[in-house]
Length: 264
Image (cartoon, rainbow, N blue to C red; front, top):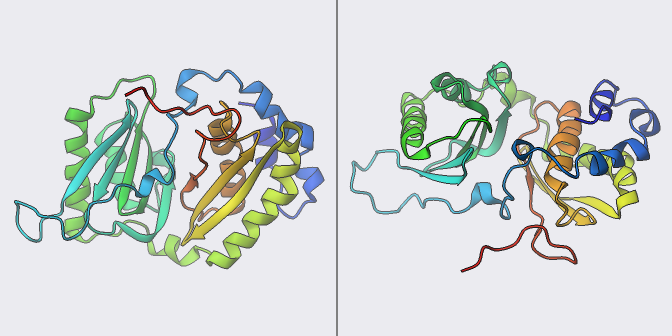
């Protein structure tokens, strides 16, 4: 990981932007991560893939009327989204990048305890996304039912998905929007401008953030590393109660598309 990431996170947000990170430092990630290791780069997400498709609450079911229905949708070998027929964390999201960061998320704690392969849990509205260690092949046919059962059991007990303290500390959408736009305009965009890139805030829903990557960042092979290891960490350091940071960029479009549809 480029050294500037750790330098950025050690700085106070009250410091001037020029002291937090320089244009050259932020641009360095686009050069140093042009050829990431395979496990460093997730498969390209579709637009707001965490939200779609969802199971309609009135969809037919062969089980009891009050049975919680969950559908597993593997994204690739090390990530799977679980679609629930009712809100899991309505209108909000929580990201846990390991059991050590799940103190405010009882449901995530339960999923981490299932298997040491689980390295990240993202709970967002009607979905739960689980990532497993990239060096271990995950057989979702056998592992997904275990995760689905754990989610169902937790919801049946009525236990909280996030702690009351976490929910109470979530800033308003207006406050999140103002802070994010300040960081993008004063820190991020001046740095990636050297690569003709720009990142725009598409919207804030609850504490979930939608970003769009423009210019040289659209379709770039290192775009997800820039977003996840750079921008998202910077935002989360400034706002600990930030939820999911989702890329809504159409990476298949533009002059140099990186994401392409598979042949029919």
